[in-house]
Length: 203
Image (cartoon, rainbow, N blue to C red; front, side, top):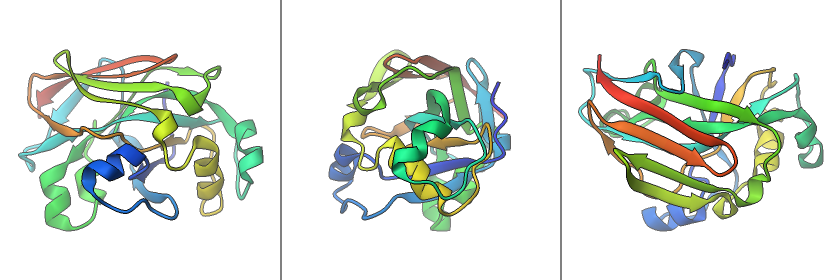
């Protein structure tokens, strides 16, 4: 279902998350990449890597690109979006701190669950987003708290790199990120899209 050539991820894109972290709101989107080999689908297993002792969930709204696009405006962006889905930007937080950058921490196989489906007819400026671990709510916010909306993100990224059909942009996480353990079930629910469910297993 999901075969992106790349996953472009956004750091610090919720006002309430910036407030939680006591950091300044960025002037422009902070982007990084996750490899396509990180993708798993709904009900797939998140494999807890032996290199880490602190793996975190990060529930996010994901954009799926429809057509090849380069250097478009915000007003044009909607023409190039196939739809939206739920994402979990799984992160080895201890390795992120250790490395001082994000590539290793966010690139393990299975560290980008996506699903359960792609939906085109949702109004992205006002969607509730919730993450639960073993049925307990850990994150709850709304996309109205985004610093940069979906069209701004597509336009900004398209000015840097060519986006290809099936590429995915994960749009940042709200406050409340935290650890997951082997055996946990993680759910990312976004209003109008559905629930992405994944269990954590030992690699």
